[in-house]
Length: 257
Image 1 (tube, rainbow, N blue to C red):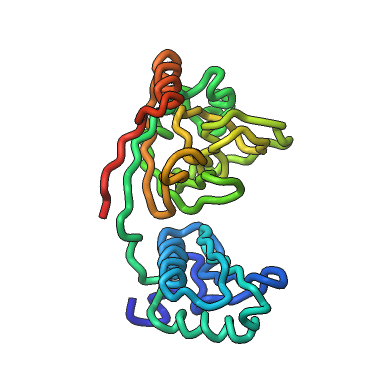
Image 2 (image 1 turned 180 degrees about the horizontal axis):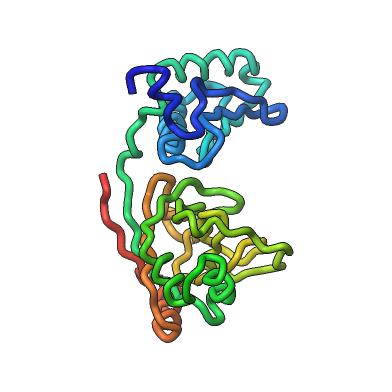
């Protein structure tokens, strides 16, 4: 992209990144106001640059769908000084023109749709406007990007699904869904690494654990990766669960770089 108009043409992108305070010890660098692969690439690329720069006083950075959280120690670096350093880094390039992250992976992950593992499949299918089998096939057939990890360790936000999947969340919060649940709403899929409450609809479950504190590395997938879900029957789900519990490999990884 060679001009301001090119940058502004990216849906939801700001003409210039926006710096906001996030409490008394963090800054948020925003590149846009919605889900967009180019905006997400900008956040991931800028996060990588921050890690490379290793700014004094910065204790942590975390890329999100459209921004980067920068946590810092105000006793080591003043907020104004950090803002100036971030502004310098932001001027280094057009971050909205950043390519997809290097060393990306495509993960093929087994998932069991419907039944006890996807109790909302029928309701999801009604909202999408197709049969439950078609909903499962369409979801599994959509290769989805990992936009961010957050909310809890290993929780992955994926998308974007087609417009028909712009379905609402549940009206009430469920007290708990199982680890490995695949949840859908607002054109996204969320992969839960552990059992926890949710207001999203459960379409399937995978025996894969995106976070395991006993594994190295604990989190396998990364922002910018892509995921393809491969439907399996209940019996195969149980077999793969046993294999995963024993430390066996149940997912396939392909290099996209």
